[in-house]
Length: 259
Length: 323
Ligand SMILES: Cc1cc2nc3c(=O)[nH]c(=O)nc-3n(C[C@H](O)[C@H](O)[C@H](O)COP(=O)(O)OP(=O)(O)OC[C@H]3O[C@@H](n4cnc5c(N)ncnc54)[C@H](O)[C@@H]3O)c2cc1C
Ligand SMILES: Nc1ncnc2c1ncn2[C@@H]1O[C@H](COP(=O)(O)O)[C@@H](O)[C@H]1O
Image (cartoon, each protein chain N blue to C red):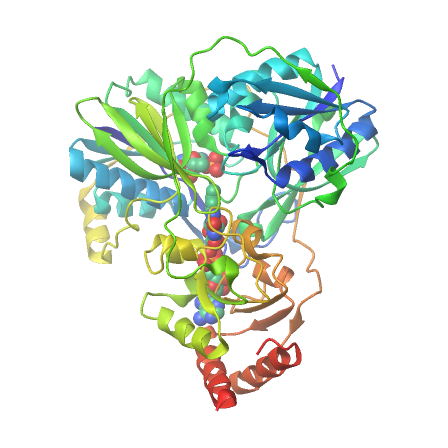
């Protein structure tokens, strides 16, 4: 299979996020970036598919802070090749990025009859929905999102996929290649790679860098302002040492007749 | 043109999904503001039976055909595109769910309109519609102005009241002609969640664990608390994706919707997709090391602290209490 995966860096939301003085962006000094979680699943699924059915995995990213480390990690996990598209992409949102990716894939004739393109199903930093569907549109290929299972049938050159609905309900679909999928969860959780292996990759592997200058219809929607959600002020915060807190919790639960 | 606001009715296997009422309520307000009719568009097989529930709309548009049993986003988008143009609509409201996901982006491309997803609130200012969406796992909100009041808006489930979308009145129904197309052959079957030993939707008390639990072995800490308190263990998505608990224990957008008397959220950040499944619990108590975790925005009781320090003591106290 010719597997192509897109990976994006997003702010780690477990850290504190500060809004910059322009009121429209996050203060970069406070951000710790990491690979978008769904993308790690997309990488994992691609590597699993390669291991099962053969082929190559190409990782594609846009230049972004700290992206190199994520790329080397993906290479250490089993991606064969990495491409970084250079440029200042900061204000570009999904529709425009999809356009960049589609142009890159088309102009370099990277899509053949055995191509499966994988993205993460969703990133946490984007209000314009999911890139995967814009990409499907630009490439005029079948596109499915929220995918949690992929199986390739070599004879028919198609894939059997499962997609999530709600309440644990999933649907099974059969899709011809080439196709585009938004991966929600890989068949197995993303594998762990030791730091030493990532370091070795940094020394030996080569990231293909690509210049890309082109005009775009739109970079995406403009955000007027960012703000933190108002704390509903509803939560009664329990304070003290663990012992005191535990005591308070038991009291509350008793008062409420819950225990 | 600005001649209508359209709500794409969300339904799954013969039933209207609640988000439809949220969208109708929002749609009504927007339509009134713009002084245009509100249209409810229903696409599917045997969906005419759903129309009596859509009385808040000024009229219901029906695309009912047996070939429309399953409508992947590209097909839905094609059908909605025709209706949007025909009705000279300005704003289209869609559900931000796994069912409708994809329709917004595809239509945005085809109609050359902005698509704004994850919408939680809206307001009008000087005639302009401003939409607020949640980003970064619910930690940050972003406001966008919808230029010329035209665009596609994905409404996040659980953001607006359901009652505002219900009405006793019956709306007139307009049956639209279903264009010729080859039915989607890709759909094979639905896969139901395997019913496990425990049905978390029926439990009174849930001890729910998130990524803060760190590894599979630590799940035991939650099991012990659940046993002492008389509840069951549920989880956020990462815990299930890691294979530490089965899918039937997952709470949230893709998992189960639960409403227990007590929901203990341990090491769960409270991302919108998680909140969707538990925000209506009667009492929510959250323990999290991050004071800014969005779970505290909906919790009734909060503890900023380490679950590994607090939970074992809590379990011990509950055991002693039982005697
Ligand atoms: C289409 C789609 C569907 C989804 N469906 C679901 C769904 O059904 N259910 C679901 O849950 N998610 C779902 N998600 C994922 C969701 O967006 C979040 O990624 C997920 O809910 C985060 O889980 P979490 O809170 O456990 O992890 P994190 O967001 O990583 O949070 C972990 C929390 O633990 C805290 N913590 C760490 N250590 C400790 C400690 N020692 N003591 C106390 N606290 C600690 C941290 O401060 C942090 O707040 C879905 C996402 C998408 C895109
Ligand atoms: N700048 C980017 N670089 C690489 N991949 C991206 C980028 N933006 C989006 N993607 C891919 O598209 C998916 C969905 O992103 P989003 O549309 O932002 O929700 C991500 O999970 C990535 O796989």
